[in-house]
Length: 161
Image (cartoon, rainbow, N blue to C red):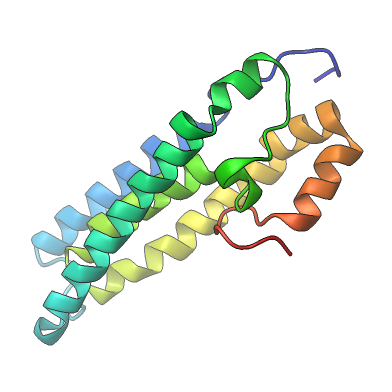
């Protein structure tokens, strides 16, 4: 990508979002059909439901902050690196939001085997980001993006380092 080119509006987001959602649905079906036996612990049903609701609500709040409040589309259209709002705490909040909603859905299944998937999702997101969007952003913004990366986590919202 040359310095003056326009960043893609969606990037690899749809591939990531639809990919992990499809995997989540598949494994939830397998869990419901008792293919993943031994992972269900009845005593954890209520805590899992509470965690599921927290993850889903957190995902929705993060998405609203990234898309509506921080107006990421405006930054993309004007070739501006967005570093305010939720982007001051997380470089990829939309991916994080999609991941949180999927983790919430998995938690509703009350199956410990499904808790392996968030680690797979994180690995998938990290590899995709490093090989696509992070390269694009570095080519477009150079040192500004490098400094931003030093101070802000890739996918877990956290205070600045």
